[in-house]
Image 1 (cartoon, rainbow, N blue to C red):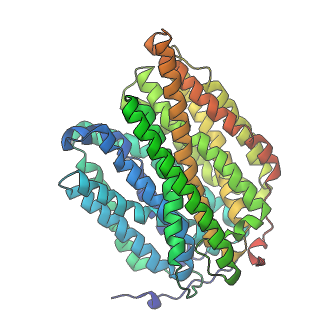
Image 2 (image 1 turned 90 degrees about the horizontal axis):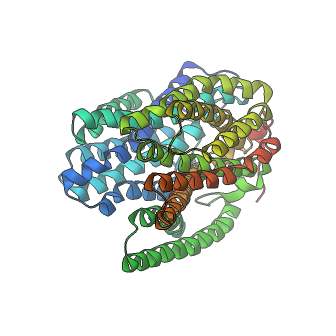
Image 3 (image 1 turned 120 degrees about the horizontal axis):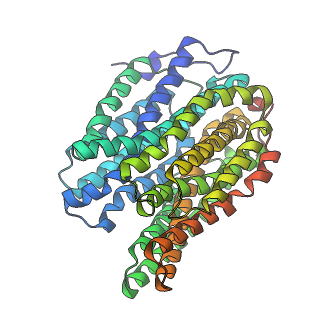
Length: 497
């Protein structure tokens, strides 16, 4: 059996990528694509699972909630894992977890086993993106990082667009198990190829894992994400007073536990990082450019994930499009993001951040404000064009933000920076979905109670949600002027204790 020591670690150096380094990056890109593709197929399958498994909508929500919770728990500890264990071992563990979870989901006899399978899947998925980001930053020379991050943008744009469309086609012709049946062989191929070709990158260091930090991280990030996910569920349910009271208590307890645990987690990391033993090293926030980039990413993620979640609902509920048609509405924009990813990366490498971030922020904000004007008479073709323009603005934002944020850090903090980036995206996405869904539902109910026609009330609710997204995204225009491209030697710096 091949062991980790059989591969010679790839040194973090050089002006170009050799064949081995390129192969590692492409392997990780392929694995990340499969993982994200799987993550975005479940929402479309929920109605079919409710019928086939005989479960309620509230129970079915756990298929996504359990996935989000696991991601929120696992991602913060990946910074430690990527420093402790070699690249090859981490990759094989992640793909084995993902493949095993997919197989378990394929053969799941009932709801409980399917939820367990989603948890196993999420455990592998949570490791994959930080591993990709950390490896890319370690291997790729600074002057090439933009174009390589452009390839990451291809994965992050195409997979979420293809996932729902693919799931819709499968569900129209086969049953829900084939969603996992199609993903499984691809995952197994990636696992086999990775076992053959994956190399170790960078250096590892032995360190004891701090169990209290793991527990506090799970309670902190898990509690907050669980609370956010329940806001959306409670808003959707619209149940009676007793159910509303129970939901309020659940939210209160989840947020209280999450906030207290997160505060204790931060306190413990600040103490442990003095001796380089932190589970998640928070010294990354001592780098101003990283902190600004993360704040910019947080605002964009809140607005983007909320918008991309409720827009298909608007297309179906207000404009009367089918699920397949609404899925196809976001496909041209996703393809555009994928095509432009490497081009935008090269522009970043040559000209830096402002030439991309400033127009990207202006375009994104303009589209979000346009969405506050749409209604039941809006043209689907116009919305298709506008959504494609939004994708252009996001493409001009994501690649420079990923590259500038991680590129500002010392090399020893790449893995922790990747973990912070993944955690922020996960929490911000859950927050965006929860806030916009709650605002949308509240305005809809208020409009119907006030005597508005149902369709007009629904359109009003969606406009209110898009207004929240536009307000949240507005500060990104200022942030676009403040974030800069780090110097090529930023990774060689050290951070004080």
